[in-house]
Length: 222
Image (cartoon, rainbow, N blue to C red):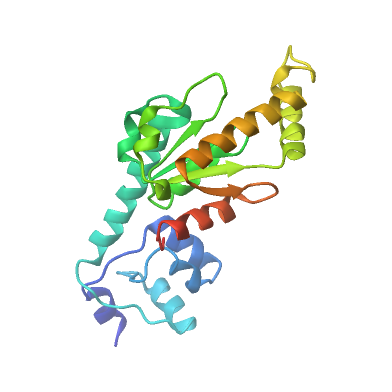
């Protein structure tokens, strides 16, 4: 096949930013993480790269629309996270793919943001003894709820470091108080048992690893 014939074939394009980044580092295999059907059009350099890495592009007309759908799905999920983050509005519960619950400083928001990049709509609910959880939570199937737990000593250190970055507060602030943290964790455990949700210990665990566990639990192959 000549270069002209290659460029005129009915093909679709991998999102440019990801494709170019992968090709710069000569890693065709990393492109496949974004889509199984990626194609090159009108660029002989991309063609040379595909030959060099011995990976032939496929020719499926209209494949670009699949890429667009995945892109818009991720954008929609990101907007969803921002709209309903940290109990700003519980109306999103019925539309969420995943509901994440846990005490403060268990990486609920970053985890939701990461899941959004996979096209998963996630909403998080902070568990605080003085603030009742919405009744709607108990109407959601337990498989859609994820409870985040953490080692108390690790949480104490995280909160103390957090307080140290805030002006006007000291390490004796109740937020990082030992008994307060144990009270919160005990309350969170009761809520998680009541919802019969999957619990994940996030102590020393990377957000990506936690997200992978969640994605497997809901059958997502993103």
